[in-house]
Structure formats: structure tokens, C-alpha cells
Length: 388
Ligand SMILES: *Cc1c(COP(=O)(O)O)cnc(C)c1O
Image 1 (cartoon, protein in one colour):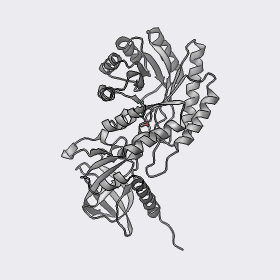
Image 2 (tube, rainbow, N blue to C red):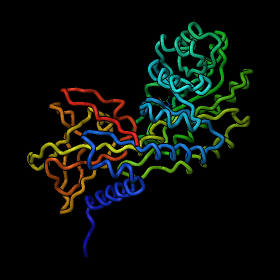
Image 3 (cartoon, rainbow, N blue to C red):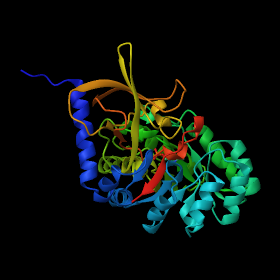
Image 4 (cartoon, protein in one colour):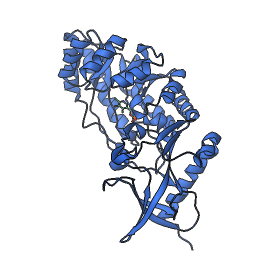
């Protein structure tokens, strides 16, 4: 009997993913072999269908695309044309969104700690919804953006999310309530609650705890005479990397049930802020093998891009599927980035047929949090972004 090795399972998964990706995207597949590397090839049609899919499964929820995931103008324009809202955190992001003619009513800012100049610019542009999670932020907004609407960020569990965020932001329900009351005293309008279950969240339980905590705060606020309107559920919709992700329809079904169950007064506006969930698996980073080495027991390949040129999330636990169009026996590889830095390692335990120097390597699911992170450290260029 022939047993299937872990390497074969991994490579079969990646190969099937790659073939599925290109076969449904003729324009992308044409360019993959010719494009100058490194390049991030984005499928705008795929982004369109992801957006439509989320809207279809969550018709009662307003979508505010988290611009930081990928702020390429063509992506923003594609989403703007579909009627998406936008979540921005900086003056530069806001400027990009405004330049597309998006009205300020379709823009929110959910980063709980914002530079004062940004709040000022947003307020002057007509954006008037801001997240807070501290008394200091309330004071800042009351000063720079009087009478604005604020929603408070709760800290919720981020377990099972590959890119947890919650330790940095968010507060407990009791403090959150005091913050909302303080905002009211300061002349701001407390409108709701927000949370973020962690980016790339494959754990439905996080949504469960988050919605339950939010409903508790909602009820406490009601008892204090504050009628909250908005439940903002942040980002967290996962995409596939080296494993399949939870499906949007399953998250939608589950979360809808939770809101029905836990909110005695249903929120007037439901919001989500997907970033990764819209662009993450609609981009492939095309790069090339520039070297090979055997180091002790380890087989290394080196690519013409790395963690400083866009693959920063590899450092924090994101496992990108890597594919080469070669046949032959599988070998286990460590994949090094282009720079001299020893931290610049893109992946370990990658099973691939042996590539030659010059072969193309396709890094799948590279649409989110890649080129937006990229620097030119060590003189190596950022990948070019090509939207098709
Ligand atoms: C980054 C971020 C998002 C997007 O998160 P994803 O997991 O990429 O969907 C949404 N909201 C806020 C406040 C964020 O900081």
C-alpha cells in the first residue's frame, strides 16, 4: 500500500488552488509567465465577486472596506463603483478615498487612537464617525471634531485568529460604558459599539463572545438612557492560505443568529469592515528563484522578494501557499527572502519539486497586507502591482 506523505498533501492542495485560480482567470493566467518579477497580480473581477458575495450573504450589513489591507487606487475604485463604504485611519487613506468622489457619509474611521491632524482633516472633509477606546481619544475628538459620532471599541478574544489585534486596542464593557457617557458629556454623540475578532479569524467562537459582550454593553447603555444605533463588527473574515477558510455564508448565518438572540433591541445599522476578506485571495505574487543552497540538512531556495518587500505577515504566522510549475519528486524547502537580513525567511516546511534558478514561484493569497507593507530595504524594489 502506498501511503500519502504530508508533503504530497501540501503540494496537492497548493497545485489545486493554483490551477483553480488561473483556470477561472484567463487574463491573470496569460500574464503570469511574462510579467517582470516581483509583481503582485490582482484580479479585480475576483474582488468584485468577493464583495458581491459578502453583500449577498449579509444583505442587512453595510460594508466598509478597510483600506489598509490594500489601498491600490484601482481596487478602491472597483469597490467604490459597487457602492462600498470605506474605513480609513490616516489622512493619506482618506485623501485617496475622497479623490474617487466617495461622499464622506460612506467613510468611517475605526482606529481607536488617531493622530489629531487626521481627525481634523476628516472632520473638515465631512467624516463624522470615529471609534474610541479611551477617555483621551474622546477629549481629542471633542476638541477637534465637535459633535461627531463615536462608537466604542470592546476588547474581545482573538484566539484562533492568525493575526490577532485585540491586545493593542479595546476596553472592557464597564469602561466602555463610562467612555460613552464621557463622550456624551463632552458634546459628542455616542452611537454604538465596535470590536475586531482578529484578522484571519477562523474561530466562530470569537464572534460569539464579541456579539454577546457588545449586546451586554448595548443593554447597559440603554439603561443609562443612551440609545445606541450602530453595531460595527470590524474585520476578520478569513481567506484561504495553506488551509481552507470559514465561508462567508457560514459566518453570516451564525452572526445573524447571535444578533437576533442577544440584542433585545436590534441595531439600526450593522457594519462590517472586511479588508483581507475582500482582497486577500484575489492576488498572486509572482517572483523568481535567485539561488539555491544546502545548509546542513536543510534545502534552501531564495526568491527575488522577501518579508521586507511585502511578505511581512510571514513573520507573524501567515502561511502562504507557494507553487512552482515543475514535476518530479517533492523536497522540503526553506524559502529565503532576497535581503541579507537573517529574519528575511518567507516560509519553512514547504514541499515543492526542485526548482531551478530563474523558475517562477507563485505566492498565492497575497492580495492583502503585502505591497502596503513593502519597503525597499537593502535596495530591493517593492513588487509592482498589476490590476487586471
Ligand atoms: C485592519 C482593520 C480591519 C480589517 O481587518 P481584516 O481582518 O483585514 O478584515 C477592520 N477594522 C479595523 C478597525 C482594522 O484596524
